[in-house]
Amino acid sequence: MECQHVSYQYPRQTRGLSDLTGVFPPGQVTTIIGPNGAGKSTLLQLLARRLPAQAGQVVLNEQPLDQLTTKQLAQQVAMVTQHHQLYDELTVREVVATGRLPYHGLLQAVPANEVTPYLEMAGLTSLADELIQDLSGGQQQRAWLAAALAQEPAVLLLDEPTTYLDVHYQQQLMTQLRQLAARGLTVIQVLHDINQAFRVSDWLWLLQDGQLVASGTPDDLRDAALLGRTFATPIEIVTVPHLGPYIVQLPD
Amino acid sequence: MTKHAGWWYGGVIALLVLTSLIALMAGTTWLGLPQVTWAVSHPASRAFVTIFSLRLPRILSSLICGGSLAVAGALFQAVFRNPIADPSILGISSAADFFKLGGAILLPWLPGRNWLMALVGGLIALTILTSGRALTDPYRLIIVGVALDATFVGLQQLLSSGAAAVSHSTFNGLTWSDTATLLGLGVLGLVVALILAPWANYLKLTDSALKNVGVPVNVLRWTLLLLGMYLAVSVTAVVGTIPFVGIVIPNVARRLVGHDYQTVLPFSMLAGAWLMLAADTLGRTVIVPSEISAATMMAVIGGPFVIILLQRGRGFHGMSTR
Image (cartoon, rainbow over all chains, first blue to last red; front, side, top):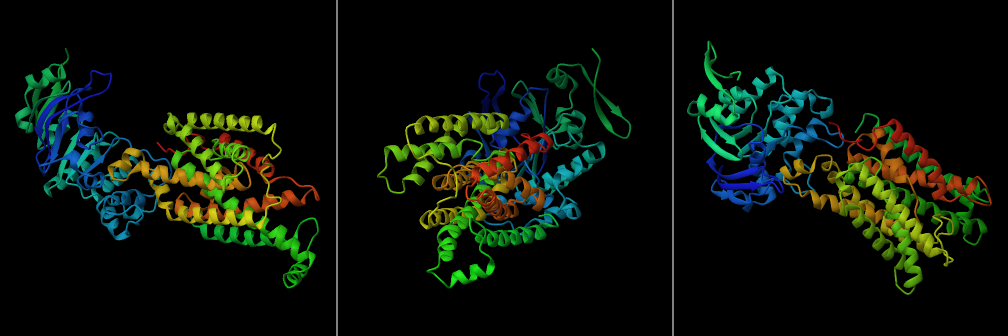
């Protein structure tokens, strides 16, 4: 997936994205980082085609995203958002089954055998008939991720997937994302925790004020001056035993 | 589906059969089972006329109307994601009633006039209801709907002060031809509703989640809204506005058989049919030879139910979970 001169301006706001060009390497975990208001979530919305690019285009496998039908898009790109709202009760099985909708007609039922593998993968088989509302935050997150994976997408987009997770589940999720990428899935996520981003990613996008400041491997971007400029705060990179380089924010 | 759903289904079907039998027997003159069976083989008798020309069309009409109204309410609740959304409370039915009356005055020659005019009224009310921000705001929806309802009731009174025929929303005096119309329109709508039940389930997800999986949200939303509107105005066209069936029944159904619309819709259909028949039968037997209209019966039962639902239950924000 790549962006070619992509711009988007919110109506009546100065916020937006201007002329972004860059790639999200296939089969790798890319994390978009940057200060608040840099346009991270907006970019994710554009990659999911929830917002239209006003200039330029998002390209997936050499095909512009806006040439795909809604259904084709759903077979290629899946998204896991921060908060999952439901208006009424649904079981875990029903939630995961929604991920199979891109492959069926609107009046066809989703066969159970298409859902079970994803329930198993997420370790939710025993909870399949529970209401998703009754599950813990971590289990709910797993169910929504399972629904996204059931779309069999080429690209998985995640908006701050660790927000509602404790440290243990965060670790588990990041390991799972790395495994999925190793099997060929392109993972693109927004993370707030900059150290986590550097630790788990193959590739990073650094955004500031709607512009792409830099992109590259964590080693390329581990530059105190660059990060300090972007986040407008003095930053130093220290080496922690058993952990390696660690980015710390210095007091003014 | 809850564990006891099977029992509840059995219960409501038993009630339907029992109440239908009682409704056949009860009335100004009580006809016992032997008299009913005797009348069936004596087409010239007075009892036969009472049963087949008066009671049976009325029973069938109230059954189909109750089923239609309950399913229409359930569909509106699914689309508006609001547990008290219903064509009668949102002004759809009163708009249909007003246009029906207008049609009787202005276009008396039009074939199928009542139904066509009711449909036009329903469409106009639905357009007003969905044109602003009401779709995204549950409070606004109900307030706009109530205002719309009051407006059309007012307009109707304005128009009817000169006209003789005002709708009293009763099953009294329905002919076989009315019953056939109701059955034809109702059965068609109910069959489509049962086929489309999974769509009501999809609408439990947010619009963005549905777009994410390639589901055309607006097609689902409008199909189900138009279907609910069609079911409600078909009742209005023949009988008039009957409030609250569409709120009471689906909410009870969810509590009894679970939240899956593939179970909620058929159960609502059966339970709505029963409630309407029970209300009408009670209404025409408690103060014989006079009677209480079905609409009045439902207002008396349904009003308090909605108040309890909102004061104690989950309310407008109701169905959203986080």
